[in-house]
Length: 172
Image (cartoon, rainbow, N blue to C red; front, side, top):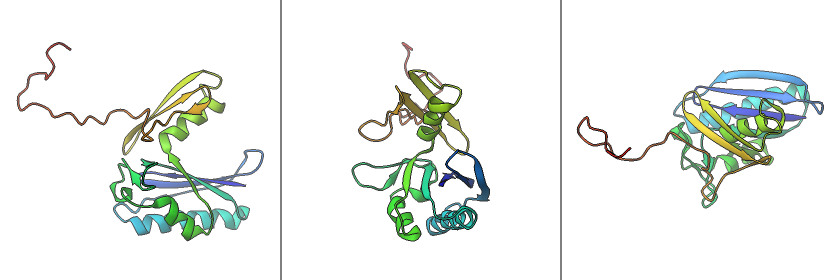
């Protein structure tokens, strides 16, 4: 059995799938916005509810943001209360097992590239538009994360805008 968690900015949803990919459990709850500890507990509660139905399972979580390869801490999450936290470690301790975390847009793009609308295509770019925005890139069946784990992300413009109404790059 496998439990998947979609940790979003407004909701957290859990699904449990059996070995044949059949849905055995699904439940959605509101995300405790702004409260890191309550978010960890909400995920643990959903895992417990799912396991009451299907038994002990592996747990994978798609999240808004990434785990920094350099620090192991969450970064770039639009759910800002996750940033700078060791979410993977805290959930592993709380659930007494290894937990796999990945960027939700990467999970989405990989799913579509594997057995969804883009199955078999060599390059897939998936976009999530919800509480936040995100992008995932899959090339030849593998997620491209890049050195900083943010390859494929889009829409996060850090350029300063001028203080007037003129387009800042006249040659564009």
